[in-house]
Length: 270
Image (tube, rainbow, N blue to C red; front, side, top):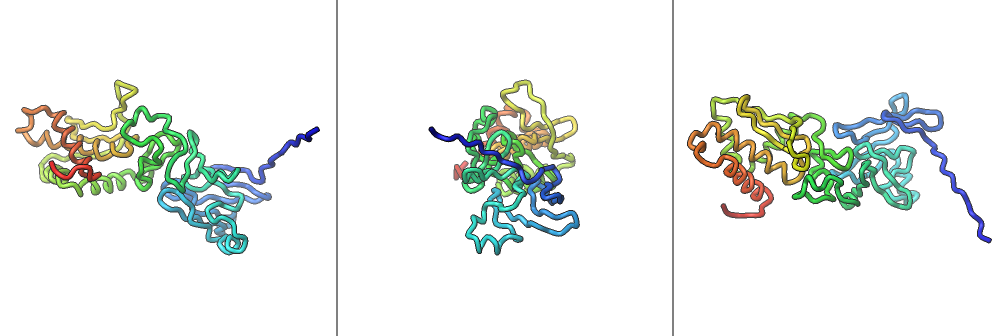
């Protein structure tokens, strides 16, 4: 008769948003602007761990444990201490050699830069690869739940950086420079945008009354270039009277399409 065994796992530490308690001592997390745990300190402020990450979250190493790693031959990409909350502040799962990050809705593998399952909200973002992390832009965005990409930290600085990126396109640069030269003051901002169709989120809108371009925090992937370009062109239309006689929506969408394709170098002439 086969014997049955009951395996019990006793957690050696207690986790909290601020850190974890182990062996009667508290250890605290030091996070960066994206929520990544960069350091772990003791109650006296002494650094116990110093984490370094590649852009997509793969762990470079733990400075406090490099020698121990070299001597034991342990995988340097797998944390060895009680703290398993690392990139994005998410738990690093090592059971069975998984080495995955738990992003609530799905698990993420930083070594292949992809989630293991498709986005549960993929029907809302059909042009975007449903396994991508952060819409393939982990510098600008975070994905705290594995479902919706978010702008985090200093939105103004990130918006400036994104517009600077868009201005590398000649068409966008011309339109944006015309806005800068006009007497009208235009404002770019992030904000929540309501949509009449729950299956088709509104990711950007230009308000003619206060000349404000609002971008949704749910922008991801190729939509970023497309939405910014389309709404910027709508602003350009208001200072260009000769464009009032054309189909303004069609022209703005065409401009956005050409700019987006050129940004990804999918077309060479227009």
